[in-house]
Length: 332
Image (cartoon, rainbow, N blue to C red):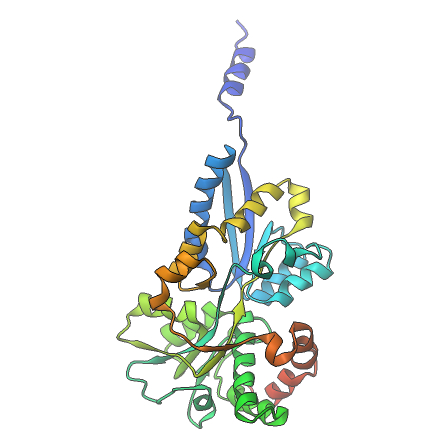
């Protein structure tokens, strides 16, 4: 008896009617734990909603480095970055549609954070604000602004502070950030590397990173060993997201990718995001987690610098203010 046709029929019977899809989310360095919780929650909802199984893979690194990797061919279905310019790079390469900001609420930014300071127990160097980061003998740890959105926001927040203190004097502000950079003992490529340098390698007196990372660090390593310091002002860091159109159209994953990013705005998604110490827009989540987000004066890139295009041309282009400030810093 030829049993091959019977085996084929049995195999076909047991093939599920909904084939699994896979999404790749290219994200910034310190979002690992956030998406470790977001992903299974969305997968369960998507299966219930669509009847389809889904697997989500993650790629993490410095935001700007991740953007270049996607631009060079990494097949990410979605990007969840921490600065607009990284998605604009993909837009210029024809990977992301030009209307990506209008596809989702809040200019495609489901949550935001800000740079704050983390010091060692008892704050032995008495670091209280940005001005303390230029003092002699202070070692400041934050990631490289060349590769990390986290590092760029730190640099820009320090510059914005100096502008306010000097009543808009650009020369004094540039000198201030040069002095901050001179106190950085090592530049890691991303925020998580900077955390490792400060917490595990025990290098530096103060770590500057996103508020969400600071609170997570204290939770993981113990509040008694580390102390959060909220500066007098900081810079709002919006975290933009986008579907990578060229990839999802090729893979046939647009529906799942779009729903995945929309989930970040849902009440359930916003609750998870806020639980990971990111500031959100949903009123219920805002009320529920209000106690963990102290009030602080926040300025924006648009208000202080005239937008990201101006920032890139003035500060981050080759030979710009950042490069000149780095040249004044000692070799590492």
